[in-house]
Amino acid sequence: MSEPVKLYGSACGGLTLQQSLEAAQPMFEGKETIALLYSPRSCIFARLGGEQLHDSQGVQINLAEIFEARIFNRDAELRWLNHVAGRGRAVLLTQAEPPSVCRENLPENVSFIALKTLDQTYLVWGEGTRINSENGWSRLTTARIGRLEVPLSGIAANERVHMRVLEYLAEVDAQGKIVDAGSEPATAEEKLLRHGNVAVVEERLLYLEVA
Image (cartoon, rainbow, N blue to C red; front, side, top):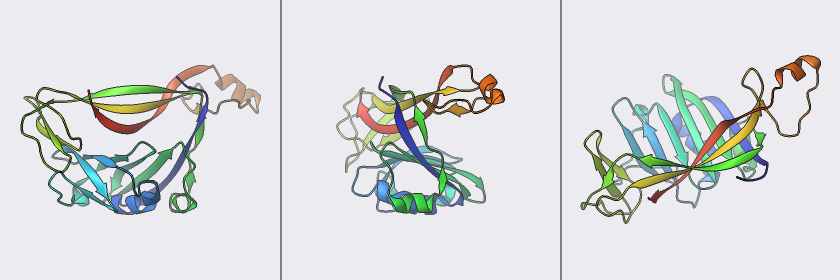
């Protein structure tokens, strides 16, 4: 665990996924950035190059088919969820204060101070095969989901993949709303809502690694 840390959050509704990528681009430029994408037919990984997402064969992803996306690197994560007709809410999360252009493009401030952070690991379904893709991609397979191409090289047969995650813990009130660390209740009603419960209120995807 760590000491209290501020998680900067910038958000905006009514954006397409492409507009969201363009709004957050300064946080991804020059950094290895991958995406976890959900469509009605599949869940896939992709790599970000410029302002475009590409699959394991280098083919540009058709963003019109995506209803949820999580684009991330070690410094920041962009989330997007389709609400109506290909437009939805975008949220950029980072521990480093985002550039002013990002705050202008995503003007809603959803920052908060977490009491602590906690390193966490998710196990990605599937095991490595002897048939690996080129250009830094590998293939995982499992009887339940078939095959999954992952943007990570050097996965040997039967090896597994971890997704590293950072969880943010904060105090929540009786209504489940985040209470910023160090804040004092302003009214008697607010004091009644405070009960000291601590919960994981946010998480940020970081990177993939061989387990």
